[in-house]
Amino acid sequence: MHNIEPYYNWRDQYTPEEDDKSPFFGKEYSEFQFSTKIYNYFIHPQWDEMGSPTLFLKMVYVNYLQGFAVIELMGEWNDCLHNDIMFFKRNILNKLMEHGVSKFILIGENVLNFHFSDDCYYEEWYEEVADEGGWIVCMNFRKHVLEEMEQIRLSNYLLYGGHYNSVNWRACRPNHFCQSVEDLIMKKLAL
Image 1 (cartoon, rainbow, N blue to C red):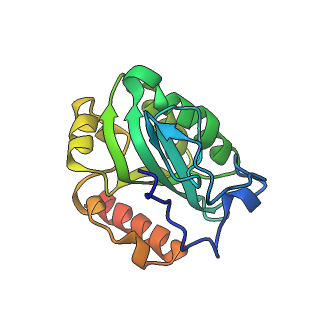
Image 2 (cartoon, one colour):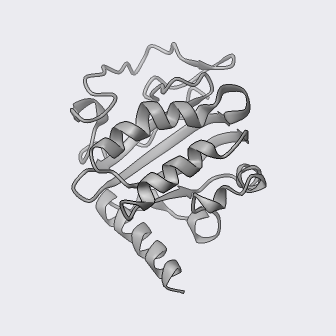
């Protein structure tokens, strides 16, 4: 797991440690010192902690003017044991929403498992962004993770699966990617 790095090709456009509105403003990263673990496995030091022992993230891109955030996730999303959505909502999402972000793209290629509890934080998050004309999209999540999400009907609050699950987002520049995701959503809503 230590070889799985967060996406870095947009660092010329955005870095969370240089963004004074970011929860990670001023953080210094190491490329060589591996100290954070998921269970007994070290993970790459570029991943950021949010309060969960099993789920980590990287804010890959944020555009406050357009209200977009692209967040890559890594690990096990475990609401059942660790209430990961609570940590994610309180420590990361609320801070972004305070600065006008209402459109969230979650990249889930490295989310290995999902264990659900209830949907209260998802409902709260959805209502807050919907009031601002926003949305939440989960992209490229593994099939078994999406099946677990569907067991508690998170599709009531999050957009996922189908055409959201095979997007080659790394081939795009960040603003173009965010706009194309919004276009997909608007096209779907128009149907």
